[in-house]
Length: 208
Image 1 (cartoon, rainbow, N blue to C red):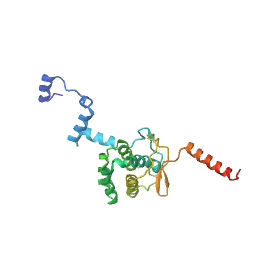
Image 2: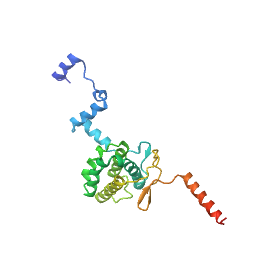
Image 3: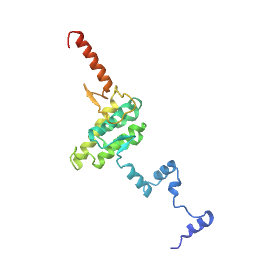
Image 4: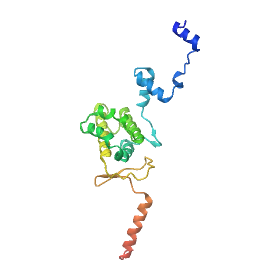
């Protein structure tokens, strides 16, 4: 096939056109290209990859069920809420008005990386039907699942005294609800200490 005249002239002046031009770009340049060319093949592929649910985020595994997976999002959103009240307020308003599009569009503006990544991945799993056994199939089930995620986000974002505990959240812990408040579970060694103190008191008053 004969080369186009413009291509011939370009290659005469600057050499052959590189086929790996995309990989030669920095991540910032790629992001700018996608922003400038939203209908390009690169932009479509990037969107597809972004919307693909991940089995793991930051070493925390997904796919253990809706309740367990939402714990990850709740933990990181609640933990970051004190420093992100302004950022989260618009999303909370979207939840209260049941505006799914506004809520989803605001996710990329979340500054906390962990909160943004876990919320995004949870929603990608919802959209892809991962929790089909927990929600009815079809539009009704998807609508219910979206509403659940939005409501849990609102609870996390508005939580004032969430006990975030250590920073090494491994995703295997279950968030407990006590008197309407959510807490991470007490560590086993602490439970053992409390049991020991109770036993000492009991034995002091005559128990065996």
